[in-house]
Structures are given as C-alpha cells and as structure tokens.
Image (tube, rainbow, N blue to C red):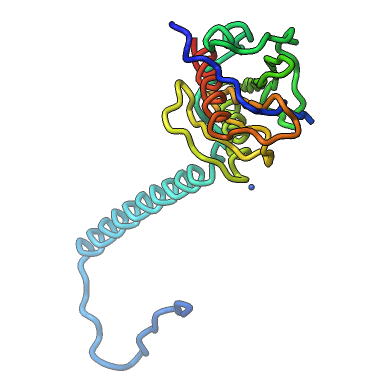
Length: 245
C-alpha cells in the first residue's frame, strides 16, 4: 500500500495530557306417581357396561389431561438462560506504532513506544489492554494514537466489542461529527475535547477502540481546525488500516 498524503504542518500546539358451588341433585319423593317400569337384567347389564366404559374412558381422558397439564407446567416454568451473546472478538492484538507511522508521510519522529500494557477497568467480563504511539518534534505539530483492546473472557458473549462500542459512544456523547465509512472502522467521528489547540478522532473497530489527537506547535495559539482535522484523519485512517491488516 502506498503511503497517504503528507502530514501537514501548521500553527498548532502540543497535546496537553493530562440496567357457584355445585350442589347434590334432588331425589324423587316416594309415594307420588305410577310405579316405575320393571327393567330387564339385560338392560341393567348393558347399562353397567356402558357406564363402566364411560367411567373408564373419562378416567383415561382425565388422567391424560392431568399428565399433560403437569408436563406443560413443568416446561413453562423451566429456567431460561440469561447468558449474553454477541459478535466474537475480531482482534487478539494491536498493531505496532511503526506499522501505523509507515502509512503517513512526514510525521514527526516516533517516540519510543511502551507497547501493550494492562489498562485499568472495572469490567469483570473482559481483559483490557492499552497501547500508545506518539510522534513529536519541537516546533512541529504532534500526533498521539491511543488504542484499547477488549478481549472477552468468555468467547461468544460479545463483551469485547460491546466495551469498545461503549468507549466510542461515551466519547461522542459530549458532541461530535460522525465520519461515515472511515477505512475499516465500525464507527468513527470527530469528538469534542474542549481545546482550541487540539482536534481528536474517536473510533472503534470490532473489539478495538482508538483515539487520535493532533495538536499544534505553539501552546499559546489556537490551531487551524480544518488543517488539524485533515491531519487527524490521515493518522486515523492509517491506524484503522493497520489494525485490520
């Protein structure tokens, strides 16, 4: 890949770090009406047989309904899984600073990088690490890239990307300008950092979030924001491409 357009220098200043009852049926009163007709034994036997069939059939149906009810009740009350699911972690490591710098022309010299280090977080479901790259030179604009890798402790939960997305969303909550289709980033935008001497881009890409801060050479003077954003975009694109390669 050919390096991008040159990183332009301008009057800029350095980055300052700083969820109803049923009754019984009535009985006929004795002594009233004609005597009841005689019934043959055959009719009695047939009646008993039919009654037995009805009782047996009814008992069988009742038993079936009872069993079905028990089975349905047991099924409906079974506990459901509360395990979260999400996209798998896309990355297991972050690119080196030199890999990013090689994609941008005329950057200031690269300061010795510290490499990937544990980052502080209260999240119990991820392993969180950070890496930073800084290009600085006296009297010239500077560039700082900070990347955070969120690795899910339990595969398949989507915790890594969820954490990276939250970092981007938090950065854009204070105001910002979305950058559609920036390199390989999932989402990207210019985020407000309340400084006339700096500009910043925040993006996340899978389970990696990154922030690019460009600052000027003279601390006492505001910088040209248009020029600053152009430089920040070059570094952000290079970072996104390096992460994805």
